[in-house]
Image (cartoon, rainbow, N blue to C red; front, side, top):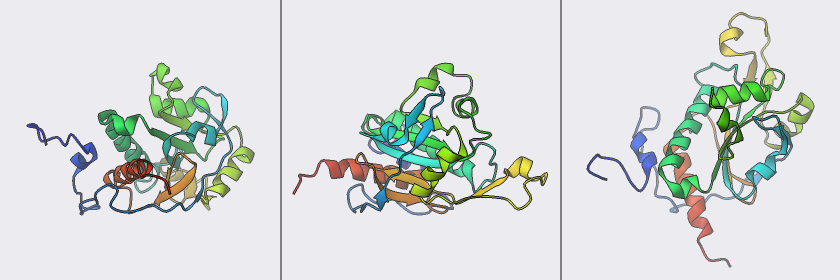
Length: 220
């Protein structure tokens, strides 16, 4: 700790314990993260409207990927995922070891509403220059036909509420979904999946550090 009480080695620890996450995270590298499955690919649109390959965006970097949609206001839904991404973005800005190696992606599953323009406004506001950022991207697809195989490859379940015209959906959004955030290594393997109850930025960043330490280990 420096004289201001900031943790210079692991800035994620500055978030501290909360009622939801009342524990101390483990030491990076003190555990392993076996590969769960291969991360899927597909055609996506970046904030500038350019068609790209999802895997090509991720390749060569550790990636944190969240499936979200901008109309979701459920406090235990997409806003929770986005809060996690913002916390990780804070850490990557404080620690070059994280910042130089990490991609952060918010991927919409509502392409009819979440156009590239909507995603850019959602992620960057009026910062037009940010639409060309590669470290944190807000992606969508051109159609549900492009989206469906991506969701299937990540086993990300999406549904439509029984009463999509219910006025409450103006606040909570018309879609239902599993809350899931994925940690993907440089080789395109999913190494952890975070769901409700595990959206602790300290844990996610510790997992990222564990992957970085794993890369430093000598091969067989």
